[in-house]
Length: 158
Image (cartoon, rainbow, N blue to C red; front, top):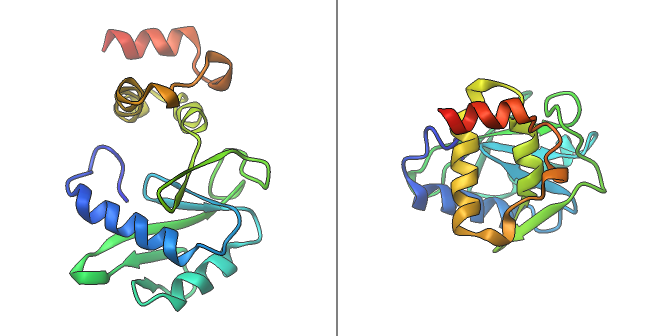
């Protein structure tokens, strides 16, 4: 589940996301964020166990690397836990949205995590384009506290 920059095969990505949702159906709190599976701190082992039990995933020993391998696909997924590897707040109270059978981080939270570096501009524009097509996900300004006026101006200019 690569970033917008490397998203080249949407059906393959959707297949991986759907399989991830099925494998983690009993897992209460997770979110798919780009190519990362974010879990609450202390729950990485449980997520790895559920993915290992699925024939669709190959979980590398002693790492946070996992691959969706069904039907000859090879989609890499990193398992991250906040605050160590996922720098934003992610706990039992963090809002997620369920799309089909997959939990994803609320779009406003993804945007807020991206409004930090100019190198995130391409991802931000991709997400805002998605919001344009799906206005129900358009965040309010208060939901994206890292979107300073200067950063928004920079994105609009480029």
